[in-house]
Image (cartoon, rainbow, N blue to C red):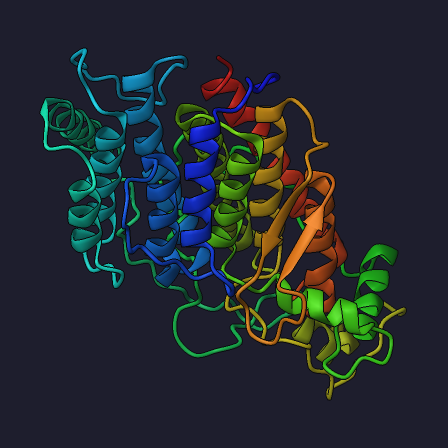
Length: 421
């Protein structure tokens, strides 16, 4: 999208009201409605809250599927774009809001049958704000058809598989689970992507060689800036490390809803932007965890504790070192947040035709001092994410950069194949 038409004052007002409803201080959503609100941003926010209980890697895939349904329902009624997959017959008198609501609800209840946010109640309440007329009935039928089509495409896609994990023998560079049980995201490499040909299509080359200068430099940076009681990390850097530990799927989606409001996007434009970003991000997480479990690279805490066996004369062990924040429960390379965030911003830049879009993003993570941050360009947020993963003690710099590269590559492929017109 290279041109955004002049905004509708009514739509902008409704979107602003919706954003105030779904993004109160602290970022959590409220769904009490006293008047109709546009379905696309409303149900996108519902989806974001519904997936919050899931591990972010899996949540991104579920968000992608839900937004494929939202997008196809909006396009079916409003036109203007090629759908992602499903194009049902649509009567002339059809409510877009009803179609989107039905598509989102019917998809979400199948993806998350035990959702704690009460999807049945939310849907019933939303429909109560719409007219009880033929347009609403037609919209519900269209939305149901879209949801059924999307879920048929996703049948047997691996998202419900149970995949165990057998730790590899102890060796330099090999991931050692930091908790008991099965690490997170083991089933992601086996989930069928939404657009990619395979999870390994863009698999990166792998982490830095343990004996390299780059690895030694990254390890030193982690020791200095990612330590729990670092004397070099500034208070602002510490705050940023906490800021970016929020659940990044609803976090980024809230930011995109504010962008839609600020830029005056129509409902179908909003649906397209959200679908581009979330579908890209879902495939990025699948590919990222394919790489994680292909390379099984150790986390900084083990790398620093066992630096005496890495074969690099430039590194030294520190058995007392601890990261600022608790190490995530999956292999280190590449950075999942780098994959996810870079995929989203690449998709957003493609939608707007420029990276130079100002926006804000909030965090509901614990211990955050500055709850909302502002950016002049999309890529500024990604750079901050990559820094924050080092300051938290989570990732080597190279793994952050490689994760971001992977996300960008996937975004370009997904957008070129699915959202080129």
